Amino acid sequence: MEDLDFLKKICEVDAPSGREDWLYSIIEDGFKEFGNITMSKMNNICIHKKGKSSSKIMIMAHADEVFLMVNEISKEGFLKFKAVGIDPKSLVSQEVVIHGKERIKGIVALKPAYEDKDKNKIKMENLYIDTGYNFEKLNDLVNIGDYITLKRNMSQLLNENICGKAVDNRASIAAMYICAAELKNVTSDLDVYFVCSCQEEVGHRGAGMASYEIKPDIGIAVDVTFDGGMFGDTDRENKLGEGPVICIGPNIHSKLKNRIIETADRHNISYQVEVEPGNTGTDAWDIQTAVGGIPTLLISIPIKYMHTSVEMVNLGDIRNTGRLLARFIQELKENELEGLFCF
Image 1 (cartoon, helix red, strand yellow):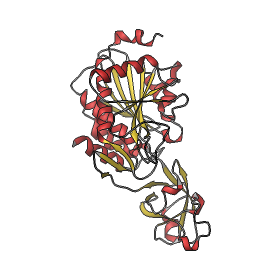
Image 2 (tube, one colour):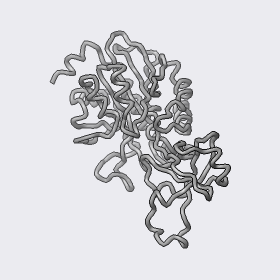
Image 3 (cartoon, one colour):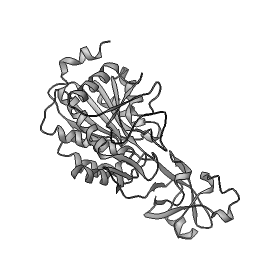
Image 4 (cartoon, one colour):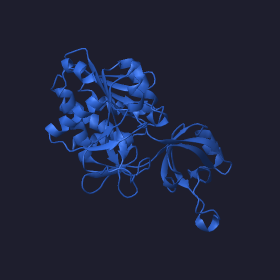
């Protein structure tokens, strides 16, 4: 299927925070038929689809993925590293790619249990990367500060579930792709800006940048959220395969939230809800307070095993997220905005 092929492509490309430009050519190739594509100085990628009015809606999904960085090259020929957003337990025995002067494959290694007296405590400082090179060769190819990304191809599992690395948040970019395809032959009232934002994993920094540049009337962040099953967040009730998750809380504009729920009900699109009484930890947090305040929604795709190399989502959830966004945009009229924004 076309949307699955697109998802596979964007998940298997490496684009850590600060190097979202490595994803640009695939985004450009995928979205070029839907609007005008530009990239900002800090790597926010924007697809602009012109509407009938001057009012604007911004749909945002972050492009960056969690990553490692080289911070030491040992005389024995191993790499030490620092991590962003990754649990050390999930790194043991994983394949990685070091982005030095050339792409170098490596494995994350740990002392065998029979040699490690502290074997039950896996700490980042006890992990190292083995490339097979000696110090001289490694020192020639790798610099301190070079990026390291997880190496994993996407796998299809049962019941339309898929897993791989960087599914957070390329699944949401795939949902935007589906939304854009649904709107391809539709001219909406509002200008639509699809944004693949930069540096979310290091503090959702691209969200503020794009919000100030575009100045949208409405902002919708699309991200992933923890499932509530085994090994998930048992305080939540989110389940893979039961639809997009609509967030409720002070980060979310209550009238827009009601409107998108009505849209889902009207079109028989299954959805779930979750409560976030504080910081949602997503681009929505920064969109809301930019440019004097932007009415904001957060729509999430349930995910298992977040920030590992085997992040799992359901294709039906991705497609329903795209469909819901498309119906919401298609039915929204400029003359409704004033009433929607008034409490």
